[in-house]
Structures are given as C-alpha cells and as structure tokens.
Length: 115
Image 1 (cartoon, rainbow, N blue to C red):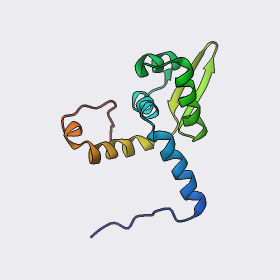
Image 2: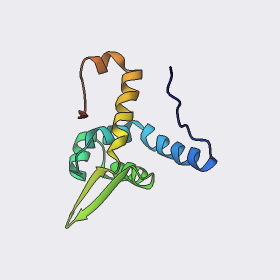
Image 3: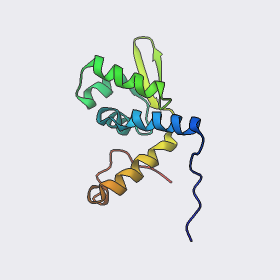
Image 4: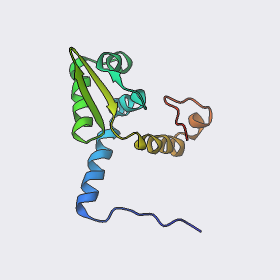
C-alpha cells in the first residue's frame, strides 16, 4: 500500500516551494549546497571549491540566503556559511539517486548522511 503524501495545495505553499526549488536548481548553487553539506565553511573555501569569482559566488549565496536555504554570519573579516535546514540534504541525495543511479550506486558522494 502506498503512503499518502502531504503535498502542497495552497498558492502560498506552492510559491515558497517553487522559490526554494528554483534557488537550488542552478548548478553553481547546487554545487555550493553539496559542498557545505552539514558543515559551516568560510566563503573563501566555497570560492576555491566552486572555481568562480567572488562576485559570482556572492550573488549565488545571496539567492540561497533570500530563499531561506543558507545562513551566513560574519566574524571579523570572515563570512561563514551553512545550510540553514540540513533536513533538505536527504532530498538532494534522493534526487541524485533517482536521476543519477549509476553514480549514486558507486558511492561517489559529496556529503554523507548519517541516520
């Protein structure tokens, strides 16, 4: 028997979910999220990993912040970023499992989830 899903029905819920999905759908933003995983990292580490300019990464981080996906804090001259709600990471892992089954089966993980 299939489990009944609690899918969104209100216009407000659909808009919020759509905004979040649009935010994570860009390859650079998804790469940032996968790099952050369950860790807090400084922006310079994100820059090195993403292989882009500071301006570009700052713009992508701002989109993620506005969507409520990433949190950042400043300590002196460093900006630390983390995934606001790590419960979304299994969703990314599940999407990977569905759309990239050969890679997921090989264990090529950017982050590991502990249950």
